[in-house]
Length: 553
Length: 77
Image (cartoon, chains in turn cyan, orange):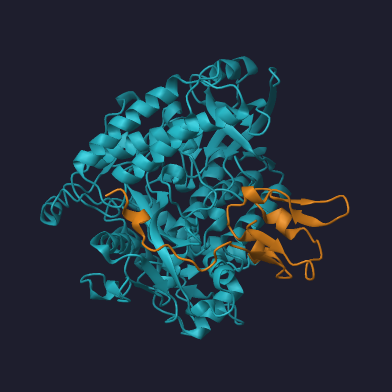
């Protein structure tokens, strides 16, 4: 392994390679700033965006499967988002989301993103999970096509990207973030990056659970980097679950099941009963936060496995879907060949994303000068649960805003190789004998058991003790080889995420959105509903002690 | 091997190679694109949906066999 280190200089360093990072790169490069994109995988082919459906919530109120337009407006989109987020979203951010996504989607369409439209040029708008009006515009080729377009545009505007590089640590010059230390994941070669400002858009921590809907996992790097730099994190108790298909004896990391449900597919239990229909209060367009616990409880009552029956989806919808393409449909085709529409597929709950994250303001700014965040790494838009279609919309709107703001921030970096070498001391050293990979597996299992779909205080406390121990062990461990260093980073990122999530989940003594406390009666949660309409926030100077308040910069 | 290329249909355009996030595909010196590192595949299906000639399919050894119970989902409780 080389021991010397190269240094790269850039105006804006963007960490990540999904929709938010690429939107940030496009916006920053458009201003003429020098942009360097560093991704742990391949830009446009990593994180949650690459395999997402790509549904972008934008309240045009246009056509839906041959049905003429509806009365949708940004105001209704705003209300839907706040209702789904159970009142703890940051309303300023939601307002920006619902208003700015409309011109942004039009602009992207005009520039060549293949959003599905009618011959007259109206958007096909499908109903995303929890939406009161059909609101999702979907690119043909899904989110992958959108990311590909963003990546090419960013490159055309001069952004440079490095793939297969993990960021070990951010550099700080006393007053602001001034760059980062990166490592090539294959060779272990280190690189010092001096940057005027840094945008963290590296996703959340979908690897926290053994089952996740995203094919390319994220390891909590975004949270760890921001936390170590001194930024605030909030809403960490809200882990959003969805369903992942089980077939051929294993669980597939594949999302999109709720889209099938919103288009007429039904979950059936082992007796063939569409059990969701007998449950009161779910309504005609149930939200994900309502669907997942109902599904989970059905399995626990011994009526699993739960299968998705697609036969009730009308033929016209399959045709439309086939044109757009979808990972789950590809999986069904692969498993069953022709006639796949009439098959059923078993599902298990799986982690969809971490709704908590870095506290940001309207331009993605954090409490640390020079540090910005966007996408799944940030928090504030979604509150306690996420409305379908808002994820990609958030990435586009706030990725663009963070990129533009980071370029405008324009600091001069004084980061140097010596500072990078000092930062490396927290990671590189005599190889520890600890089996990091086994620790990660155990951590994920414990997270599944204690931070899963339903939670109790005793299990959360058990988890917290375990995660604290694992974080301490990871903190004092060092590694030498690239592979061991990657595993150590995985462990540190997930341990921190789990520590904060278990503390926040213990602190919030009610059920709200996708945080379900089984040891607290629903009646008690209803009584304290108004009092709990706030965020649980962690700040580095407060240690691991959560503070209650309204998150925002 | 989770992906299979139908050689009758494939024209080695390299779209799969571009789309794969795990770099499982390589182009041989003779120009043939093939899945060199199939064990790295994460079943994202991006190559399948991106193939303009529909030449790629996913293959599973026990396609269609579903777990007897979904105890996996609740084994923690």
